[in-house]
Length: 391
Image (cartoon, rainbow, N blue to C red; front, top):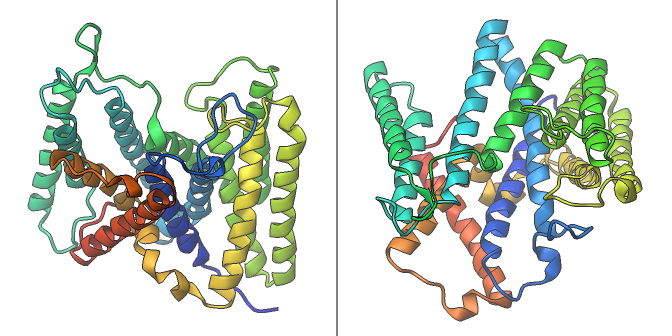
């Protein structure tokens, strides 16, 4: 049996693939006459399309990375208070960005002070100013000046925001937390669970079962209340699933139990998928919109099996160069997520429209594929210029 490294390089590859696909499915959602299996499935339909798999995979990947991030800080000598502050600030950044993105969906394009595209560009610039990974050689004064500028800009944008309509205006409010916000809340809970469990696999397993039970009892009607921060625990369950897989990986590799690792990952992947299909009739079917248990466990099972394949390709067979073209999506993931907001806003400002053959059917699908590559290319250029967000 080939030896495996303690650091899982395949996590970065899986993150890059997932981010690439997230950009692709977000763009292809605007293409007409595409196959049903490629779309998001309607809320009340018992089923899922390819697009419904991407977000849960991303939550799972955040969980895969989480133990390494926290352990890395411990290795640098950070104490409990310092790590707790790091977790809280990281979660807050994601929640704030998600909060503003959600309110973009309700932006009053008719009577707001700034056109939607201009507002979105300024908002994205403020995110970069606040959360840019500033060069180590930059003076603290200059760095803080940019951060303060970003904070001032985001406060101004919050004050001039106008949502709803002229007849029924609305201020900023959490309609829902958005993709980044959901990740932020789930990360806040999952990271503290990992921190206070000290990475103990048994404790992590108990926590995973507890949050999964919250989700299952919520959707079977046994428990009829959504808990503050936790909600129905769907996102936390997915993230803790990733935490568990990484924790078991590290433990087994440290003890050189390579065969046990392959058996265990395969077992958990198949078990998760089977459990999702088993509980499907009893807890609301498969629904991404309602975050049902079947959706969680089916998606988790698929992601675990894909991850296992990537471990073999990347960590065992050293084929990471196969994925070199999309590498920036795995190393500057947040930057990659935000660039489309700038790109589409610029398209709108210059009144750019794709020709019909690139907005429908196969042509539109090909377009979305190249849009995803274009975004990653832009991120690659920004990386070269040392411009990337770090949260």
